[in-house]
Image 1 (cartoon, rainbow over the protein chains, first blue to last red):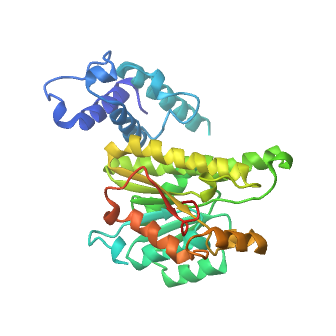
Image 2 (tube, rainbow over the protein chains, first blue to last red; image 1 turned 180 degrees about the vertical axis):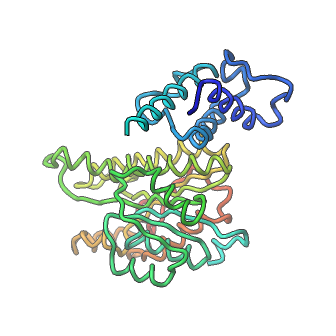
Image 3 (cartoon, rainbow over the protein chains, first blue to last red; image 1 turned 90 degrees about the horizontal axis):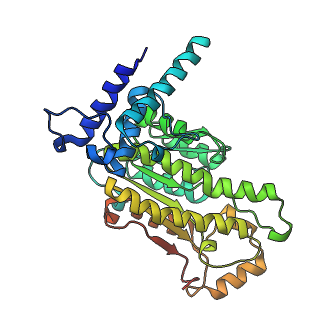
Length: 94
Length: 248
């Protein structure tokens, strides 16, 4: 089961992978920072969502929800926590 | 075939609607050049079965409808068989001729779904995969109806013009991710789709074409494979018209 801490770890690790050399390995990813403050441009943010689909197994942005309404790393973690919870609840119900 | 032979590892292409005509011709040229090719279409054809027999290890077909199916699933299916997609030929489409004034609303929706919305969703599914690897090429098969007005094809023309707009915007958006996007605009060439053209119109088209004839499927397919190749590595966001000069 994916908990919030696990999802936070997945999201921040994926961001660090995307940033590559742009990220100082001694720094954590601040959860309340905006994507621009973290160093993600719009294309990198799109690639982050694609990478997270592989990691988490779901893409929360296929329906009514849009990535443009998500502004900080913490908000992004919350979206994935919500959809991962929904997926797990659905799996348990089956 | 040298235009699509790069000497690199075998490449993977998805050609939608390659059960006949231009799509199948492009698929065959890619197969002959060493690519692995997947396609889907609503039904199979004898021509398609023959190509599948000739290339059993590198060509695959699944039933599918570009207007209705989950395009990401089609891309995943192809990846499982051959690996990540390097090239998309957004070829699936339907031409229906009918005066706009009397066309049922549902038919308008269907034409836009098959010729624009579905191809856009397929382009997105492939581009997502390509962006991870930082390379790829998308070729949208458009129509001269996107460039010139013709009576009886308003909804089809609107969809194809939309596809050209998609090409230009995607080229801007995906260029930094190493993905090229172009539109191929075939003029009138001999294929099942143009068999609906009346003899009278065929004569008129020929008379208005500077080169004095309809094109051949192979002439269009050659340009398609060129645009997919590394020979076209600096071409993106363009609408390439191959029509014997009809629209010049």
